[in-house]
Image (cartoon, rainbow, N blue to C red):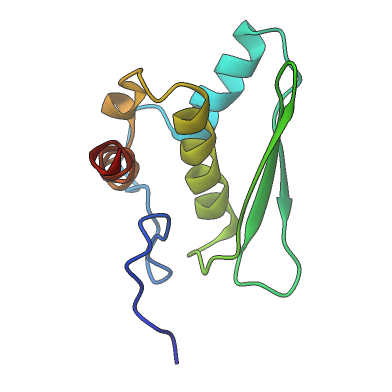
Length: 117
């Protein structure tokens, strides 16, 4: 039995977050492109053991390494990666309206973080 959560960092675990017909970019693609432009290594995504598609991402930014982790549950590991890529991008560049290019769920997630500041 899962508890409903007010956690704005949580996505649905019952359906994929990115619509099948989505043709725009994704948070993970944007994060990878940002790292490439900054001449940083690609972010690394790791599945967390004993979770429902929980995920960890490491972004080797200068001067520090950013690490984000979410236990889930996520629909699948890809959703976990997309979620943490959104969180990473927001942490790195909250002032940029990158969310405009994202699928609706990630756009809403980003706008929710903005509204809490």
